[in-house]
Each structure stands twice: as C-alpha cells, then as structure tokens.
Image (tube, rainbow, N blue to C red; front, side):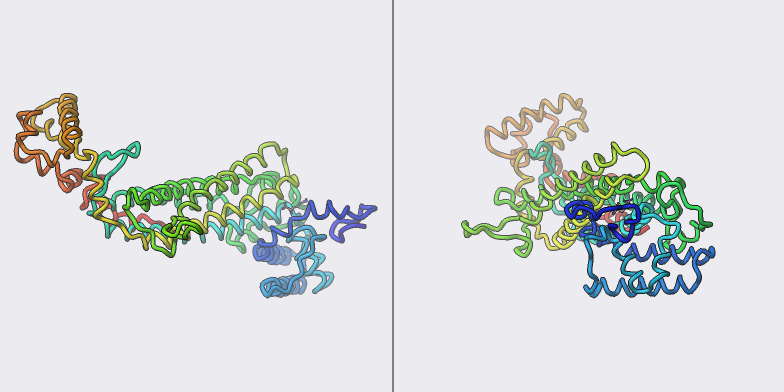
Length: 460
Ligand code: ARG
C-alpha cells in the first residue's frame, strides 16, 4: 500500500517523482497554526454532538497543542511522503495519541479543511496588512500636515500645470490608499465564512453543528452550500485584486518619488538608509526601495491573473488544481506587506526640498489659469480670456519671464482691464489660497482635510 492516509485501495507505492510532484507541504506548512486551530474546533464540536468522547477531544486538543509547540520550536519533521500540512499533522497526532488521533478526521475532508485553513490564515493576514497600511496612512497625514502650505508645481502630462500644495498632493496618495484599505476590509468579510462541515463535497452523515464550530473559530457565518464551500477560491482572487490595486497605487507613488528624488527635480531627498549605491559610479545614490516596489507590483498583478486562470476551467467541486492557489496567494501577501512596510518606514523620513518645489512652481507659467480667471472676474468671457493669456504666455516664453515677473504695463498690452491687484493673483500663494473649497489645494483646506482624514481611518 501507499500512504497510510489513503493507501487502502492501492496496490503499488506512489512513484517517487509523483509523490514529490503532488506534494504541497513545502509551501502549505505555513498554514500549520490555522490547521491546528481548525482541528481543535472540529474535535470540540464532534464531542459536543457525541461523535467523540470528551477524553478523545482532550487527547486531540493536547496532542495538537504539543505539535504546534514542536513546529514552532523547529523540532517537527515535515515529510514529503505525507503530501501536505494536513496529513503531516494528523499523522504526527496519531503517533502521539494513538486511536483518538485516527478519529479526528471523522465528518471532515481535506477539501473543507484546506478551504477553512486558508480562510482563517487570510483573515489574520488581511488584518495584519491593514495594520501596516494604517501606519503608512498616519505617516502620510503627519507629513501632509508639516507640508500643508509648501508650494510645488502640480503636473498634468508631466508638464507644469498649476501650483498645488505638497500637503494636498500627499492627501491624494492618502485617498488612494484609504480606498485600498476599505477594499481589504470588505474582502475580509467574505473571507470570514466557514467551509468546515462541507466535508468532501456533499456534507456529512454525522449530526454536526456547524454554527457551533463557526462560533469557536470566530467566523461571521458559514458557507451555505457544501459544493461551493470546498471549490471556490474567489475570496483569494478578491484579495489579490485588492492587493494589485494597492500595489498599483504604491507603484505610482514610487514613480513620483523616483522622479522627485532625481537631480532634475530635487523635490525630495530619500534618506541614505533607504537607498543603495553603485558598484562603479561613486556618486550614485539610487532610490532602490521605490524602484523595487514599482517592480514588485508586476508580480502581484501576475498572481491575480494566475488565480483567475486557475479557477476558470474547473467543474464543481474540488479539483487538485486548487492546490495551486497557495503560492500566488502567499506571495501576493508577502509582497504587499513588505512593500507597505517599506513605505510606512520611508514616508515619515522623506526630506522635502521646499525651495526646489517652489522654484519649479515659478517655471512653466503655473498661474496662467489664475490670470484667465482674473480676466473673467473683470468681465471677459472665459474663452476670450484663455486666448488673451495664451498671448501673454507666448510673450513670456519669448522674453523669458514668468507672468508674475512682468510689469503692469507689459501685462496691460494684453488687456486694459488688468490692474495692480493682478500681482496677488499671479503669486503662488494667491493661486493656492484662491482654491479654497472642499477638496481644494488651499493650505487651510488641506489642514481641515487632514483633521477629517484622521477619523476616516477605520479599524473595523
Ligand atoms: N493539499 C491539498 C490542497 O492544497 C489539500 C486538499 C486535498 N484534497 C484532495 N482531495 N486531494 O488543496
């Protein structure tokens, strides 16, 4: 016979390569804690409904607790021939406690067991991910508060567009990431449903109490249909989608940091401890952290596509294909958490260069729209004002001066309605202060938005 777990009907041992090829223990052993947690709850339920004795339940609980300690002490011998984390732990339990260990799998299948383990694990990891994300969100708000009235060039098409405050720009990052946090919280609600009790696919003949097991495990509810419970992995796909979106946002932030940290922009300095040097060019200090995060976003996108593709052709219910769910999911989690951590550490340490940001805002006619709005307020139609300011800009390009550097007489060549009060409008402070409404870039609006933002970070 082959494996002691299922070898009864087999007449030859599993091919050595096939055993290795079908095994998952090398990567699913990271589920050990949640596998044990699920097994203890299952045994407790079985004892409650009279399928196990309380002595058997206690022996199982104690045995599994000891096994968890063995694993955590690095004393557990993981065996490839036992295929996966579930059978490794069950075999060890039977070694330790004998016959009661052989009863643990009553009314259960690895199919509902593994789906339960992944959900328990992912539920915890989503919470952990959100804690790191919250640290980053708070770091962004603190930096935004310090930079609420710092003026920088705002861009469209990566061309100078209008002055904005640096704090306002950081609040844009905050909004992106807060939506990601909401998506993670929402995803967690659907993860937090219990497959256990579905057994292989059809349910079980024992008088199980699923609601009780769910309560023991802190699940919000049970998966209502046994076929669906053991076969779908949409919750993992949903997590990868939320992770991909978050990584996409981190990647855009990275791209900006890389640009801003360059000699051409000099908007921010990324402290040395987040950078590395070149083995040939002695002067180099490279923004490796944001570059890596930008690069890593690609692999999380890949995991999302892997999982979608993994599921799309599977008939109900469980198929071994599903064993392929773990590596993409685990790597998406690891990559997301590491990237968030890198950002949470780096953002509070960023050193903004207020002078360089201001200089950039003074180039590229950033207040041209303000001049057009000024003319509109003096009675010119907007489209005409646009044309007039366009001509003033062309003059500025040719005479190499910003609108705010021109004399009143020069400006009046383009419109006689221009008066002395134009210079306040053309100033950087005047420009940002004038955008004084909810969601606008004015420093006082930024400060108010930060106050609201602090209470919008939800720990639910
Ligand atoms: N290692 C398997 C997985 O990851 C556990 C479930 C196996 N079930 C089965 N009937 N082969 O999906």
